[in-house]
Amino acid sequence: MTNNEDVKDYDDNDDDEEYQPLNKNSQALRKKKLKRHIIIDIYQYIMKEYKLQSYSLSSVSEKFTRNKNVELSYKEVFNLYKKGDKEYIETIARYCIVDLLLIIILFDNMNIWVSVTEMLTITSTRIRDLYTRGQTKSLLKEFKYEGAILSNTTHGLYKWCFLLDFSSLCLSIVIKHNICYSTFIKKNSNQRCFTVKSYIFAKKPLGLVSSLVKVLILKRKEVKIQSSMAIGIENIVLERRQLALKILANSVYDSYGTRNSSYLQFIEGAKYTTTIGRSMLMHASSIISSRYLVQLVYGDIDSCMFTSDTAQDYESCKALAVHISNEVSKEFPTLIKLEFETMFETFLLIIKKRYIGLIAGKHKMTYKVVVVSRRDSCIFLKHMYLSLVEMRMNSAPYEHIMEFIRTKLLSLVRNHIPFESLIITKTFGKGYSSTTIPLLVYSNRLKDLSIEAKPGDKLDFVFVKTKERFKLQRYKICPSYLVLPHNLEIDYLYYIKICISNPIHQILQLLG
Image (cartoon, rainbow, N blue to C red; front, top):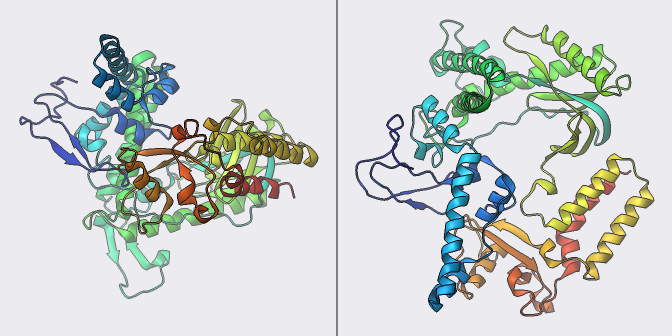
């Protein structure tokens, strides 16, 4: 992209620079500098903003624009180029042109320019820093504190659940309790066990961080109101602006727990905020459970979910949720507000922090840390798992579920499943602690095929049958494109043992 005078993100020299992407497993990249030009790496942008099964240009384009690239691997491109025939060169040219057009279409359709300019305007930084070094140069979410996981929850299937969420809880606590570097008063440096009373923060004046967070929250509310009344490109700009304000506000608080900078780290502030937040969540849950005929389903970090036998339809469930949120909010300081966030027609809690829910009114499924949301799960497992979840949510008889599992596994072992549905994709990392780790062994074998795997690369493979002495996983991993030409056999029993048995067992446990 050529230079925009309002956004100076270039240097006057043409020296290349090397940088490490935010994903630590990725290889260090060398970025080409062009005088008076801005370079935006769309691959890095999409890697950071979206969680996808594949980040190839063809896959991303098909998902977001319904367009696909010409089916041609990079090895085929070089082979055709070596042949040099006019027809082959035209094929390569067509491939390159489509590549270029897809990039332009993605850039426009995803409003990437709007997103990055809004973020850099608010953060007063450069585009290259946003997508290579984070929202600010040192604010990385590396140091995390344990939130509240309410213990009296029961795994299983629930109908008509409503989720109540504390709006900007941590940020509100920072403002309310004036938690800032500039207001901290150390009471007892020798105290071993932490309690809220371990640390003291001055009430006045308002600290630097508290003031900044307050301004960002108020500004975001103002922008959201403007966005609700805007249409077209104005609405898109305002939506990206409010999102940028939200990210920046959270980044300010996240700096308290960073290990990336001794200047920004503020462990006392992070502990204090987390402890106050945990106590508020548990207090809210206690109030709701004692005053209303509801059952606690789940509570995590800054939200809690309930269900009620007396509210088993959309209207009554929503009315109850709004009423509870308004009444319980009165029990907390003005800045702390409990809000009705969403409602689930059906909610399946598998284990702690793993669940699947059908959002009421939208007929949309949401997943958290289950196989369907993981890129390293093969398509066969995802489809089978989703079908089992739907059967469980629809209260299918136990016999029907077991028959379904039996039928699917028989189809697998009888070779009725296309091997493309068994391809697994994993990200190749760096700094492996052992030379026998399967993915590292696999990458070394790829070198024999003239394929150099670099940190951050997505490696596709299947499990194939091997001799008894080569039964370990590192020997069974094989590139998918070698299966058909070499008549290799897929090891279906190994798939069942390694990939399928545990997720299916989790679902069966919920049947009782």
